[in-house]
Image (cartoon, rainbow, N blue to C red):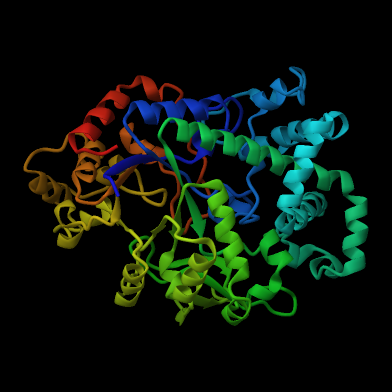
Length: 504
């Protein structure tokens, strides 16, 4: 593998018109920025439709895409929206305005989908039908689930119900997927279900066009595959047999991690854990489909929480923190070996951060997967961690200044004590004026084949630009890239740094 480098930026953060970033012109401009800055990688977070909390790591489906990323300008150019239709949805916001999306953009997408369903040409209908047939194994269930959830969520809000998850609020006949109940609701919501299919068709069409454009500019897309899926998701509703659930389809145990660098009480994610014997009995068919879908969308994939493929931290569902859990072995090696047998060699990155034991690293090495190194963690204490210093990195690894779960490097630096700052300056042998770029240069100098920096660090932004704070439920995922980012001199600076350290 050649020495490579790139930038981490989720598409929701792009400075597109409207309340959220999209796959439109500004996304292609960001690809151009990467190309002109000498970068060959664009890393994104999971692209699934988000639910409560708006976290891409709690998506409503691990197969579907987030329709809010669809570019409305493209729909207007195709004739599915008029200037009058999408004026309201085009008022730009400095941060992602999730409430505005639910009210405005969803209505614009509904108008566009209805127009498409009524007026699409014969060829357009054939292409849409081919897409629907090709993806029927997940699309039919997802479209039904999403349409039904929109209807019942609205009903729950009117009744003052806070938790309208499918396994807590839906009628038992629908939660349990009784045949007649499903047939009836699919008839009642036929138009809404068709809209969901159209939205997924547009998501995939626009995203794959953007990915193709990136490829033409020499930029590969690194996607993200969370090991777990959300409880309130089409995944669990459509295939509850794959998860440890009770008779009401509620988790008996949930996922998380024990106390670590990020949280003294651990992280209680709340995702249902897998019924691994069922997956083994089916030769990991569900997982194979999941990986196959990921590689339809991305060039490379980061496996989030790789250590869960060795053992997962299972917590009784009634617990309020992640402290009282236990490590339960999982058949991850068998799973990944089976997926490779079925799909061929896959370019994967193992997220091996947090509480990592020798057996996890041994598994990663047997599978020959690159791991991750965070420079913020390297210099977190008064003495740098020797094995995490750039000169000691192994080639088959990916070095970051930080990730979406970390503070920005400037924010991290500003929150360190004078003694900690002095220790880091001692390593550099000089005063640190711009910590974000100092750590970026250090990452680029690493022995690791791949180096990636969050775009916030290229702009030397503080904690106000942080993407996510683990173990918190509010204020996350809404940061957006300033519109003038490419006018701040960072493109040339990054290109020079990349050339100096022979990356690209």
